[in-house]
Image 1 (tube, rainbow, N blue to C red):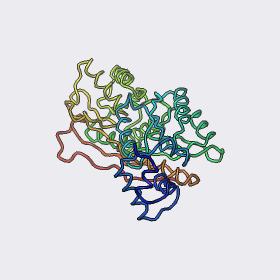
Image 2: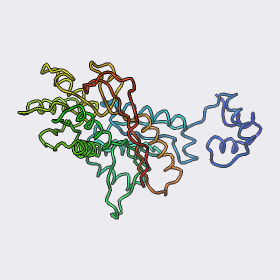
Image 3: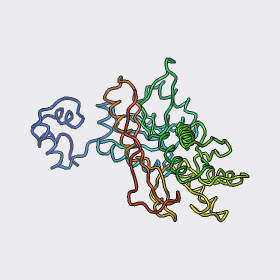
Image 4: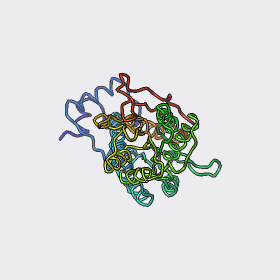
Length: 354
């Protein structure tokens, strides 16, 4: 197996110069750098990652804590993070916090003990321990998908955050159903405490108000962001004395649960109940009817989170930023509309908040 000494001899430079090129620890003349890289390629030299980390104090690894196993949406985000990480020469260590605050704290500590350079975390509904741990240990981190609101002036650490727009797209779904003549529109909302849940409820209420419809708290139920919860919540709505004629489901898992509840009662979409959902997913186009949905830019969210983290590693003291990416309205047939020739349009431009 070729060594760094072999690379140095082949390139006609010192071992220290080879180290500076491979670890990017000191500027090297372009011609010298290229000679080293050519020697690495010719000899098939593989750097020792452990030795490199001792020189640079970096492991070139990123910790990713998201519920990727149980939620296809996070699986697509993971793909975005991984592709961007590989492009920049980083590897990923992945842990599933299961949206549980206690488990979240444990997996974040485990990733930290593995000496990752930084972390990307989808925080739970109770992220207090998470924020405290990351702040106490000064871990570079980006919060993904869910926004953590830290009161100003309390001395608590601020973190970069990246998420999709949630309020306006949900209002759009409600407005679309109202435009089709529906006056009783239900919402299956996510787990209480999550910023995504709050934003989609706000969007639901805005959509009703814009359509001149009153808010009825009996038409808003929580499905806890899971398929079984979505089924239970939909069953509760259907059991109302006057059930809704249309339904908005606030994530992909709850959409599956809602469809299961409707099937169990022999009800059809959109014949008996019109349906729009937040989160598009790979097989939404294969349902009958095809699902009208808000599509989040999941892979872009993952890539943007990785970029923010790398910027944080390069500039530790810069002010924290929150980046919101636009969603798209995917117009299909579960809402009761005929097939569309134009499926999607962006609901809002990307924006960055200080």
